[in-house]
Image (cartoon, rainbow, N blue to C red):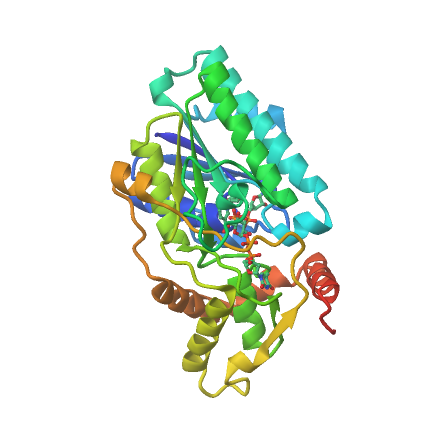
Length: 361
Ligand code: NAD
Ligand code: DAU
């Protein structure tokens, strides 16, 4: 791993990953290719813009000639592919972009890697790696007694987002089998932490609680997710690229599976402690049940024994520690939240999504 192309590096996990890798790997250079959709912002990387080991390129992963040029100009030996449309609710209201970015975009990126690394023999196969960032959502939903997802769980995606990620996972795997493209895949659970776009559950609840707005819980709030602090995820990705064999997939998760209601109640308690003089204390009184997400997966849980045993990775932060750090970061970075939330299309989308769920404006 010497010259790394990170796609989607202006988004939540990608920006955390670039910051983490530049700090921990003194020898690597990173090129960040990002389309700067509503979810991507150069504000997420402002502190890195003057680093000479980091370069930003504005563009789409599906732009084949641009990707070809990046690979050659920077002698890229490692691709870490984050770029995607990522919000399940948006995939329900408008799936087309998910097909375009997540499936067709991944296909074009794979073709570019195949052409440069394999057809042109730019490197030997042990020098290159295509690492694909995927999700637990490809496995569908668990019943209350089912064992957690493992690397052997069959795919059964339920939302257009999950289906598009499943398709991209299959494409990556097929390039390994058919063309000997050295790849790895991580299927990770829900991330949270700094720089997460405020449409997602945890940052949305923090923002709304701060402003005295309703905290919308979909359905009964008894859905279960596995939560992982973003830096723990970044560490897992690094371990897989460095130590994981090509052709392997790894489940990555936080070993913590609260209901959504418990997550939101815990956030409210933290907000009460951090802001004792707020007129919205107790913040829990802002919780409002709204119409459920169509096709809403009930339960996710992760069996992380493969990555723990083979690569020695386990999450470091407990959910309580991670939530406290996250609330503190959002409270200290309100200017970032306001700048990123003030896009007209985001406000319009947020209110459409809320009204669709029976919420009153
Ligand atoms: P995000 O929505 O915060 O960021 C996505 C980034 O991709 C943005 O910067 C956006 O501008 C960029 N992008 C979108 N389309 C692009 C295109 N065509 N070309 C180049 N860039 C493009 O996403 P995130 O939450 O950081 O997720 C990153 C990856 O991790 C995704 O592949 C997602 O499926 C996966 N993942 C996310 C989570 C999670 O909880 N957030 C969990 C598991 C897996
Ligand atoms: O599981 C990994 C996935 O986690 C990633 O692949 C996705 O990219 C990422 O967006 C995330 O998907 P979720 O749908 O789980 O995340 P979200 O934050 O949207 O919702 C988390 C849970 O909270 C889910 O059960 C829906 C619920 N929810 C969400 C919102 C935004 C609410 O109850 N109210 C809300 O307002």
